[in-house]
Length: 93
Image (cartoon, rainbow, N blue to C red; front, side, top):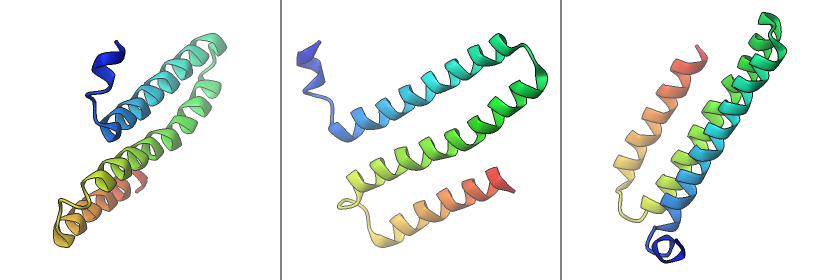
């Protein structure tokens, strides 16, 4: 297992790690909802998840963009940033 980890790019490994963390948080939240067995408490847990999801998204995108920054032109980075901003506006509006 150790041998194949050295061939994975660190940025990809950290991005995948953030997604695994997000999945673990989602699973724990689902179990908490089932444990509480109350709609009001389930909505409160879901509201917390509404903050966690975009945060993980922004962190993952930032890691990826920082690793590609030397390969992309400023105009392409601007388009990517605009796309991320539009996604966040769509989530919060």
